[in-house]
Image 1: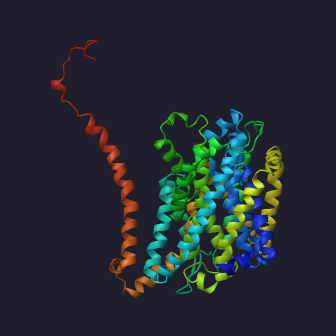
Image 2 (image 1 turned 120 degrees about the horizontal axis):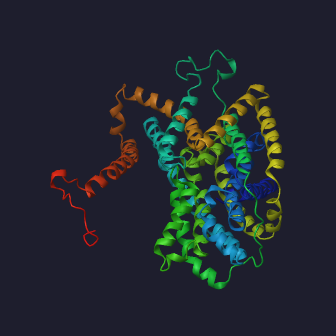
Image 3 (image 1 turned 45 degrees about the vertical axis):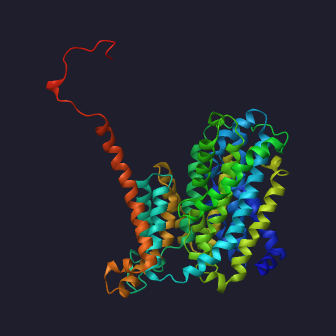
Length: 511
C-alpha cells in the first residue's frame, strides 16, 4: 500500500489524476454525455500512456463526474449525470430558497466523505476477495458471468425485457470472429476485418459516444433556464449536524450496492434517498428543500463509484457500463483484471486505489473555486459542442488501428445506440454482455469438458453451486412478484354469481 502511494506521487500520475477529476467534473456538468461515453471517446488517448497512469485518469473521470452532475441538478433542475436525478428533488428546492450554496457545499462534503470511506474499505476488501477468487475455475467464472449479465439486465433503467434483449444482442456480437476452440469463422460474412472479432473500442465509442450525442441533440429543443444564483458556498453548523447521519448511512449503502453487478451509483443514490425519507420524523420535508435529501444520495453515488472497482480489479467482472469501458482499457494496455492482478501488477492495483484518496481531496478543493467556471460552461450551446465531440470521436476511432472500417463501425453502432435510446433500450446491458460474452463462452465450454458434458456438474462444486442458486433467485424472484400482482386483484374482489345479485339499485345510504 505504501508503494502504491509512491506510484501516485510520481508527477505524471499526479497530473493525470488532476486531469481526470477535472474532466469528470466537466462531463458531469454537461447533461447527457456521462462518464462511460467520455471514457470510451478517450480510449485512443490512453494508448501512449503507462497502464497505471491511464487507469488513474479514467478512474478520476468516473468518480469526478458524480459530483459534476450535482451542479446542474441544483442550479438548473437538470441532472448532468443519471446518479444525480434524485438530487434534483431537494437540491433545486434549496436553490429556489436562496440556499444553492449550502446544497452544493453539503454535496461536496458528502461526496468527499463517502468516496474516502469507500476507498478505505476497498483497500481492505479487494485483496481479500482476490485471495478467495484464486479458487475460481471455469465453472465459477461461467456462473459469475451469467449472474453479472442477469443482475444488470434486471436492475437496468430500460425495463427488464428490453434489457434482456439488449444483453442477448451483446452476447451475439461477442461470438463474431474465429472460434477459439475450432478456429471456425462465425458471422464474418467472408470479411477479413471481422475475422478477429469486433473490437470493443468502436462499439463503446459508437453506443456511448456518437449515440448519446445524437440523442442529446434531439432532446435539446427545450428552453434553457438561467442557472440559480450561488451566494454562500458552505453549509452552516445546523446543516452539517442534520446531514451527518445521512452521510454515514449513504456511505454504507453506496459501498454495499456499488459492489453488486448492476447496482452502481444510480441505484445507490435512490436507495439512500428512500431510506432517509422513510426514517425521517418529517418525511413531508423531502422534495421541498431537505438538506438530507442532497447529502444522502450524493454520498451514496460517490461511495458506489469507488466500490464498483472491487469486482473489476479482484474478479475481472465489470459491475456497470463504465467499468466495462475501463475493463476494455486495461485489456488494451495488456493487463487482464482478475485475482492475479494484486500479485502480478501490485503497482497498478495499489496505484489506482491510492489515487482515489488524492482524487477525492482534489475534488473537495476544486469544487468550490471552479463553480463559477462550471456555471459559464452551462451557457455553451450543445450545437457547438456536439460537432467537436463527433470529430474527436471519429478521429480517435481511426487512430486505434488506422482503419476506415472502425470508423464505419462507430457510425453503425452510433445509429444503433440512438435508435436504442429512442425505443427505451439501455445500451449498458448490451456492452456488459459483449464484454462478458467471451469469458462466458470460453468458461462454459471448458467446464463442460471438465464435467464430460454433464451440466449438473456446476452444482457439485461449492462456489459455483451457491452462485447458481443466487442466479436462479435473480430469475425467479421477479417472476414470482409478477404472478402475485396478477392474482392479487382477483383474490381481493371475489366474483358473485349473477343470479344472487340484487337487481334493485342501491340507495345512497347503502353505497
